[in-house]
Length: 321
View 1 (cartoon, one colour):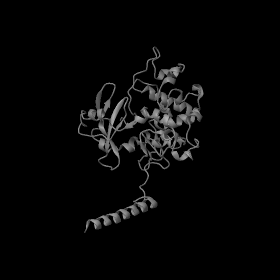
View 2 (cartoon, one colour):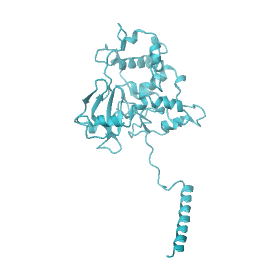
View 3 (tube, rainbow, N blue to C red):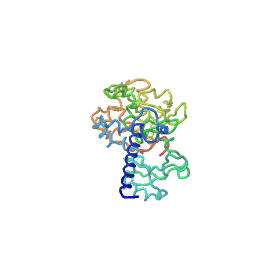
View 4 (tube, rainbow, N blue to C red):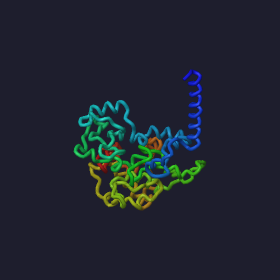
């Protein structure tokens, strides 16, 4: 073929390629196969969608322990894992926890698309490793055991989620409630909630020790903020009547008693005390806590003599993870 012929052939191919691209754009993309099934519950979009309009709130949340509850491993965390007995050969996909302890998550060897926690936990305070579930760790699917409280849009039926970590919609509800995004519409706005409704949302994860009546799992089935948590999630309130011992986590006991007193009997002697009385949700600060008047129930967590915080072991009291 002459040089002129080759140039003409190249021009024809370019025109054909342009036509194909134009057809793809008009027809909605190169792949016309049915879209993959959406992960998690319908209606959720993920925290990146919320950031488009709520940038300052998103930035506050990004630095919080809620946002960091599940995160990609940093280089120092990867180095840390290589120093752990039983786990030094593993490469983590995610890290669970940060302030008190860290667990390292890897893809499940038994269930594709799922994860498991390695049998080694790093406790930050004493700076030491603890071995857990050495014989059965590879069988404990993280999504089934823990996923509902560490994700966005979690489905108890498929053990899938929209987003790893506690995000905006974990507390405010799915983006599908937001309508045209010109107003809050049906999104959960905590400033407008009575104490009972606010505490119920927090209880969906912080009231540990109950069971779903429909699935038997340790969290409610397909719970969404604003729904009736206790229609499915059953907790034995009588367990809170026994005397508190040194083995109890005082903060955990405090949370459960506040939830019980507010959800089952109303605010009562605690007035309108609620989670946001002490906690700032987005940045998770405790400045409000320090300004509250000291009352008798404060001694659940603080020593009566000097008001110092009682010692406690920070761990998941559901699965001992």
